[in-house]
Image (cartoon, rainbow, N blue to C red; front, side):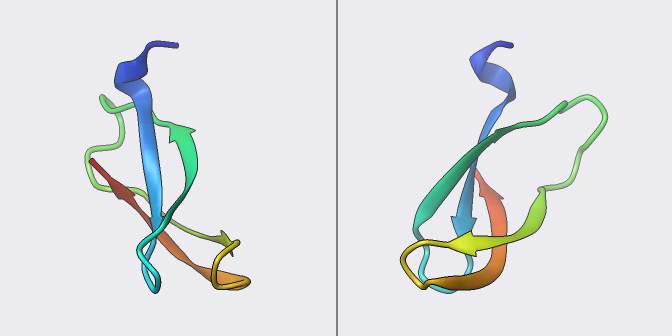
Length: 51
């Protein structure tokens, strides 16, 4: 997969980038938001896609 499909996931509470993922940008137009574990906060928080 190319680098065009890679996205960064940022924690909404502490604003740290903890995850990288892949997404099909032709199918999914909106920004991705998933509930994941934040290592800095040590809790589950929503993570949003960043640029």
